[in-house]
Length: 360
Image (cartoon, rainbow, N blue to C red; front, side, top):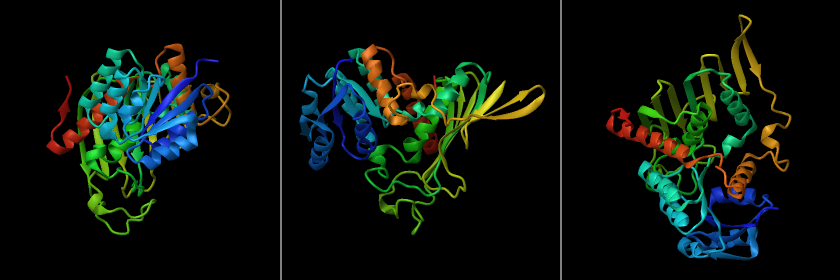
């Protein structure tokens, strides 16, 4: 059994309760010993439900970081505070998993990466969808060269009417944006990871706030308050990579779109294509005929070798802890997440200026 890791949770809101804490609870060689939230009741509740008998609750994350027995911190706060909390945690000698996106801005993300390099501590970002069986299979197909040169891709995160009305999701100051930075980030991460291409050349994009003022919008989570809706309801980007490949990114919380889908990709290469629009499908030409291959994901595969779970969040936590135990890279490298944040920020910048954004 590897050493027991002592984990501190900073931010005990929705994502911590829905993903981080219940998933970590299933990992044998970790224990959650500290919980921090600016709302004391949330920290106390999390401490009671997930903590060790001697776990502590805090309202100031800097006090939590003073505990030298804590070796890992999970940052589950709004986007605005991802960077400075992560940097402080790394400087305090902790390994850090930060919830996606990496940061509100590219500059903030750079500060996080530099802190990780400076301290020698591990940093990863919570893009758990990489651990889904279909995406692990698609990655193996891409790494094996079965698609050939991937030169066109789509990253899709489209909701018809599913605007999150809780927390600070609608607050531009806290989050930095709406569906683009919230769910578009997952689709873009998957697409770039499958392509193994992190060298953008140019981005052009646009954002829309067209439906946010509507009354009785038919939203899945109830009516939103238009006055608090300070972010876009849809955003779209066109990304040109340095090798000439093109990626389109489409995201929305509210859009009159008949077939919503999230964390979806379409990859087109010189030998074949792959997509998870419905089932995971590979399209190719075999013996002079066009064929479609549907991957059967019902049986366990490589993604389930741990034997304890098929839940992508649990698998994500397991590989993260394993990376610390074996001193290897986690699945999501901070440099990769940095590129995602850089592109998202460029789409927002292009939308504001009406001009393309070129990278060095």
